[in-house]
Length: 511
Ligand code: XMP
Image (cartoon, rainbow, N blue to C red; front, side, top):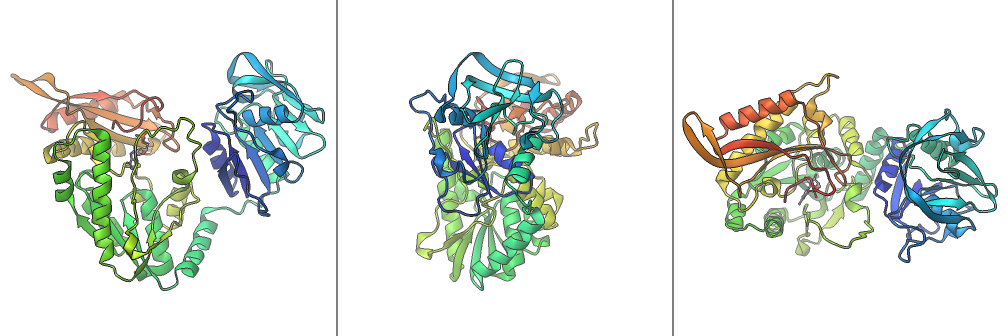
């Protein structure tokens, strides 16, 4: 495997995904957690960082742990750190170097640049610049503004690039990572959905034997793929619990239950909406709402789980991005997320997380491998607290009904809309949903009548992991149709707006 040491850059996860796309297993670890004595590590990549190497709080790593032992690739801060630590020099650049640049001179003999073409476009984003490289290193690429765009050691297998090969705008970045991971580190490229499914089913059989397992299903792709994998491994010994808190999408509970039955899963559906609505009555604070839903969810789930008295395991669809130990540079909690939290302690259940090494796109590929219906695989992510975080202020059944109706019009039109390239609009979007601005009223006119009702905001973003997101440029004809239909058909709504905020600084959900 490849180890990616994280120095806090926003693109660290992207490096991980690029390596996985090369059918190579990798782990992202905090900069100071390089594993000792692990023979399966074939190479290490040092990520970028929000810090300068000169910052007193800058993250530092002991390079002797791996330099000279396995191939090393430093990216951006990683490149600066290697230079700074080994006798080179890093200084503040006159201006921040940000955006596209072209590799004007590169060493085509160097294995890192195999297959590169002249003037290859790369993406720069750095405030410091390398002004001298260590004495045992040679420059292997430059751009018009950056002399040391890439350098390599002549005594050790160490490469360093100032640009970001992991981002889309570095057009041959994938080639560079392939050169490093496959040619230089010698990856055998054996990590694939088929091999994942096969080995995971075998491991689950060995791990679980004849034990009974409980799994919380949410209708989302992660828990669904998790369930199908487990079903394949242990069949009837798997019991799934699907809690309806009353704030799911319109008809979602019944539809998803049907899908699960078709997949042969043993699912207990629990309608607990009464309890959730009662406990949420009059609560307006977003964090408070989340806390109540999280707590109720655990209560309902545990009460159901306890009925399965001989269960030994609790399975969860946790995926890799949920677990990557974040460096948490600001130290602030932005939102408290909840999934299935808190094991029922007295049951002494052990945790089973078969998807814990996968990125979202890999979960989807595993879903295809398992021949699951596309509906389940391509479903947009949906927050655990459901529509509660899309209704401003307090929650009532009536507000949920309004939002479900508006949301259903928006999403079903998005699923029907085919773009010029033949792809469904829905499949181009990471996540879409409607928000009921129930603390706001606006004046409208309907026939001869004056209305005074709530606006609905449409949200649609593109993203790869929900850490960052851009608002989607939806086609105007699509927006016009959705707006018309919502205002004409959904009682209680007289205005439709489109949210054009990206993350950061906005978040995907409104609460
Ligand atoms: P934000 O709003 O933080 O959301 O940009 C990022 C992603 O997380 C989802 N989300 C949640 N998922 N429990 C979840 O399981 C939660 O409490 C929760 N809150 C937000 C959100 O839909 C988006 O995909």
